[in-house]
Image 1: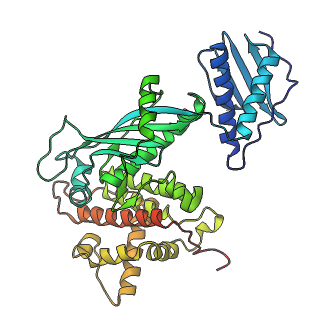
Image 2: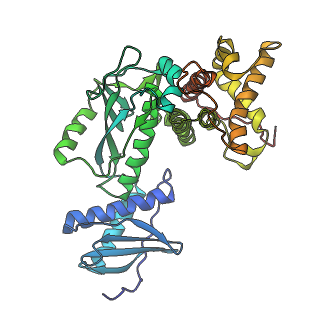
Image 3: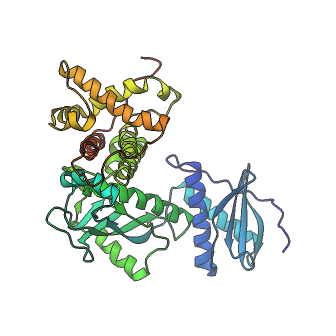
Length: 412
């Protein structure tokens, strides 16, 4: 095979709302769609970055294929087999035109099964979360929507039985409606991201760990047709927690823009990570990280007044939840804390203590557990329960009213 001269460059001009990476991923998806649908090409390899340049192999390297490389002037053909060069350039121009109009072409349907993790006697993370689960667990049955992108079907897991203390573990059939002209690296990357975020959101909704393996392949055409028919149905409810919609993909985006979606998603990821920990110190790090994800700026001044920002941000974001934690009869026991002085002083002291639960392990390392895992009434177990409630309240308040926090800004 003789390399082709790189004479024609196709510039991909992203639409206003698209990033350069998203535009290039959509461009490759369209190029592959045209190659597959018109010439029945099989197998594809996606975008790769080598020597600082994006490259893409579409097809089979030992058979029909098209290798593209991105130069400063645009995309060009590096090598090809089984396709006329002028036809290839025409396909590339057509794909670039689709990108310029932000045309995703259709919907690719994926599906996977997620499960809430059952509570097991003697397992360290389960024993640490015993008190938390008693107050956090929520029994969900039936279909639920997260925007129009994710349909969740909740059912009790028939393989596990529980006693009277805990609700049955759930099996969650998650169907994802991913924009794109066909199966591609773009759709696969999107569904992985959405599936992982969905598992964390379900954990927030259920109060339980949710195990998820993101799907790798679209569903068969007949399953996709049935799923798309359900998409227009109004029978399913939206997924919510404490009457707050957990739809961060559409509703939150409309209220607060893309940055608010990233903040809520990262907070949900951190909250979910906290539930999985065996060590109470590690759990506290992730609970506090979930809180910080909601109001730490992305500029360099984020390093200024970090403790003051946490204290002020928490009081602006969820003052009622802070006061509820202070009013808990178990607060002093759980945090080794003594109420002193007026309420304003108590708020500041408890929030300083909570922030130190993150800072000390991060800077000094995590020590031994230091408590009996079989003692479900230990202060560490109570601390996890109270921190979970605080993190939940903060995340839900942010989703309801997204906002920015300027504590530490050099102008103030």
